[in-house]
Length: 222
Ligand code: TYD
Image: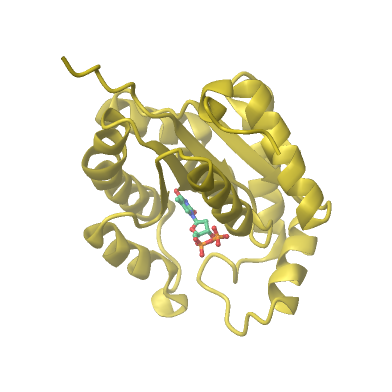
């Protein structure tokens, strides 16, 4: 008789531009894979072929100003495909899903940044996606000035539609993230992303070992 597969965890990673989030997730995925875990690294907007098309529409710097609702609906549309077609099936097969940005990006960017209000964005998700919250959300917190500066120094030549927004917009996004983390402390792990990369990675592993030990079951500590 085969043993039933245990459902994988759904972990999401959030933060402002230039927080080093994507590098940290890649390192985490490598760390877990090397230790024998099955993980899926995915991202939003995107994660499905249709979602990637929506991503292109949303981030195209030539896309101009969109109504905040349009932005929120497109984010929700790509998320519906992603959650139902990729994330939930992977979890059901016992794979841990590491997702670079998810619903908290909509709450922070569209809810706070664009001023739609966090409750409206949350309601849209609850109405259409039912159980949509991740098991744990890591917030890489950083002053957006530092993040945008890092992105520039990292050799980035052109900014996408969101990155091109004024610093005041990114300040609202950061404030939104911190407010979300404060309100839902049991779902969030907040990490100071201003620290050097090695230190941030050590804090990430330590935090995850404390908060979701099941992720490390059978994994040797380094
Ligand atoms: P991306 O290049 O993936 O940014 P990063 O490398 O910083 O993660 O671009 C995604 C952009 O889309 C980013 O500016 C945040 C924004 N976004 C939203 O505004 N709402 C959302 O729901 C999501 C998923 C992303």
